[in-house]
Amino acid sequence: MKDNIDLDYNLAEEIINDIKEDPMGDWFSLPDNFSNSELERIKTVAKKVQDNSDYLVCIGIGGSYLGARAVYEALGLDDDEKTKTKLLFAGNNLSSRELKKILKKLDGKDFSLNIISKSGTTLEPAIAFRILKQELIKRYGAEAKSRIIITTDPEQGALRELVNKEGYDSFDVPLGIGGRYSVLSSVGLFPLAVAGVDIEKLLSGAEECKDTQLSPDSLETSMLVAYAFSRFYLYDECDCDVEVLASFEPSLIYFNEWWKQLFGESEGKNKQGIFPASVIYSTDLHSLGQYMQEGRRNIFETFLRFSPEKNSLIVPAEKNSIDGLDYLANVPMTEISEKALSATIKAHDAGGISTFEIEILDSESETGLSERVLGYLIFFFEAACAISALLHGVDPFDQPGVEKYKKEMYKLLGK
Ligand code: PA5
Image 1: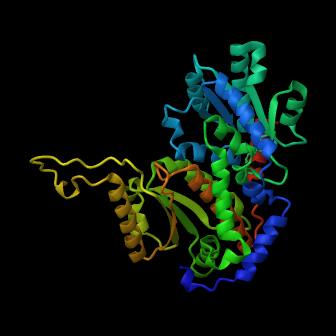
Image 2 (image 1 turned 90 degrees about the vertical axis):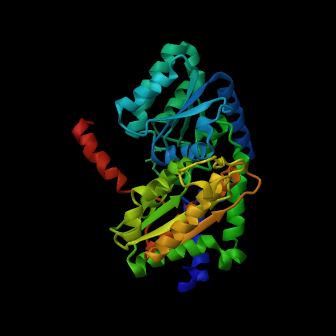
Image 3 (image 1 turned 180 degrees about the vertical axis):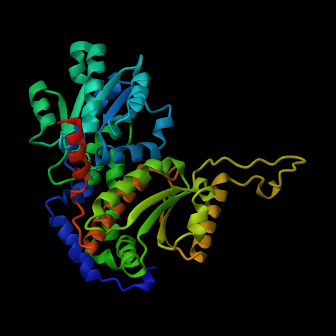
């Protein structure tokens, strides 16, 4: 794709400087400028939670929880018996059924709460917090206070007032960082540290991305810049207004959700923007695959490829088998999945879909999905998204449209 378009590297440099100087651009310096004392405090409070809780319930919606959930699930920690304190995610919907499920999981278990809300007024987390806080107080009485950690605006809002009044442990959502760019701040790093994630590796993966993709002398070979400009070119010149993020790993479902929120809220403004969608193959080759191959050609696709998992399951040999699978006897599943990925790109290319392939390898990682890889990808997409939104001529860091439904809802609820 890069070969078809003329990339303007001066413009890329200008845009990157604009991002750095934007009042909401402080996420850009998180990977290489994270405060050491904040990092230490995150670890100290995380250790306290690990020592007294089976679960940390992260209460937040949108950018306040998606990044942490994306990393937690991509690393497979939800299913890992080595994870001492597991994370649960509440306050990201208005479903009583979902909250009951969480209360049921907490039955007979020790837990703490981390409410994350920059404004402190978002309805979904506020309701979940009230319900879960009452459960906490019922369970622990005065000790409940030491089991609440609040992540919010450093200066104002209902939650900051609560911290000042009750003396809860708290972290700041930095003033110059919006929700969807906050995963590498205390917003994402604190719950991830509780779950045992190596948060320094996450940050250094992001730093590696920043150094190799965005330093002034790397722009001309930067995949990130090429991706950001090419997706805008596809939108502007080729009428492609849907991007599908595709991978072959089910543990990336929440990474996809994080990515969709990042691009959707950043770009979808002024009646324009690329609609972000996602698939998990090969599952979705059996549902959306037909559309991708032969449906409307207003789509482009971005594939993620990782190092294969070590110790992959292997298709066993079988004597006298009649299932027609002998040609795959003793072949690792990872190899089959890799071939399926290459084949899908080839088929979709031939079907008239423009495809990007982002390959990010970590030969030391057991699973291919390490903290380093995820930190790299997070920064890659955050920066590509901000660049791309600025190419569209919209502000990557606001979300005025989100307020509209809230107004209508509050009217109906009689606020
Ligand atoms: O990316 C964003 O800014 C939003 O998705 C917010 O994170 C989300 O709306 C939650 O807002 P708050 O943290 O104020 O509760």
